[in-house]
Amino acid sequence: MPTGTPALLRLEAPIQSLTTAFWLWKTLLFIIVVACPGPGYDTSTTLISFDGDHDVTALPWPLKLARWDAIYFLHTAEKGYIYEQEWAFGYPRVLGWFVAGLSKSGGLGGPVSTALIGVALSHVAHYLSVLALYGLSANIFGHATVTQQLICFLSAALHIICPAGAFLSAPYGESLFSFLNILGFYLYSSSLISESKGASTLRDLQILTAGGLFAIATIVRSNGLLSGILFAYDAIFLAWITLTQGPSRHRSRRLAVIIVGGSIVALGVLVPQVIAYKTYCLTDLDREWCGWTLPNIYTWVQSHYWNVGFLRYWTISNLPLFLLATPILTIMCKSSLWTLRAPSTLRSDAGNQAPSMLSPGSMLFRLAVPQGLLAVLALTSYHVQIVNRISSGYPVWYWYLVSVGMECFQDSRKNSRLALAAQLMVAYALIQGVLYGSFLPPA
Image (cartoon, rainbow, N blue to C red; front, side, top):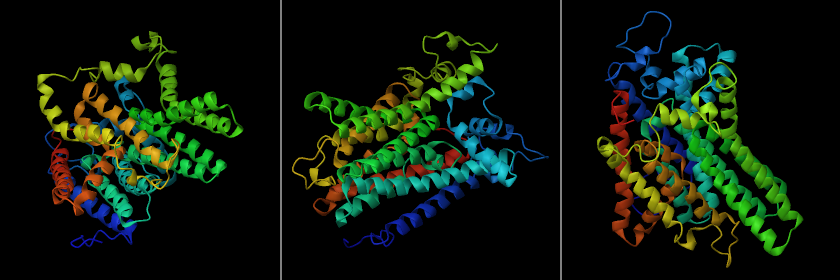
């Protein structure tokens, strides 16, 4: 270990060190948000009804984390989809599964309990996603040398303090999405390792499980569908190999599994749409979008109620939000391009003279494609400021920052860049915690 390394960074006990750092950070954020006085600038949280008389200036602490969209999430998780605009959010459906299960087994109920379950779920999911990112990094870069161990550790550490901040503690979907998406990446990369070892059955199980995780991630956040690009990439590559080199039993089996896995991912979009169609279009609630060639309640609600669409957010009044999102958008785009020229020594299969297009090391570029597309969509079609929190579920930009910092032993200026990036993330998250707890933008 280099001199001057913080005592908390112990590569001989990475999980213990990450766990300690995680809970220290989450405790600090929790105190900041809960300590914010009263209902905050906006009193919308007080509209959430709960039994008995209550003082709106003294909300129960779980409701202190119910800000902005979380108000929709808690209402929908507890009551189901009542208002059409609530269909813009898929996370409450998954949160509702946990609420329903715990309510039956533990006798819990009411918005305070729902908020408590949401907060607990976010903390656990964020912690597990930190561990999943550590495992994914080990699959991609290896874990044998001190340099590789540092990449794995520092990437996971950056995920703890990422700009999503309080949103990874509140009853929002970002933590759960991050866990599902990164765990799906981990299993998919593990399937390539299993393939290299000839463990075909394990490989198939890992691919199909990854597809299931991406499907649930897509229900939580629609951008989870971008992870299906992994399946499309491999399907096209295998189809091309089959056409040029001829079919084989091994290739056919793997291609079939990948197609099934990709189809499972698509279910994350299709199933909620079918439910919505039955709810609105086969009843007397017939709505405008029901007559579309491809009825899609999500697209309709996002456009009609939230003004989401291509370049719709490009207004002068939103310029400060674009400035706020510029740092993470720049890093996401730059890191996606970085994978095209990343040093081969970073790959776990760097010792191979001709690494396969389906090798674990080849995952680096493929993981950059969903991240790069997300950055483009956030810039052109989303409420751009949300990229600061939805970027948390994509690993490449963490690796990029760490790779820059890994050159610190030769160039102290690059070391300062990594330290500066970490300091800015911490500062942003702390300020954001105060703003979030006070019900102040940006959200």
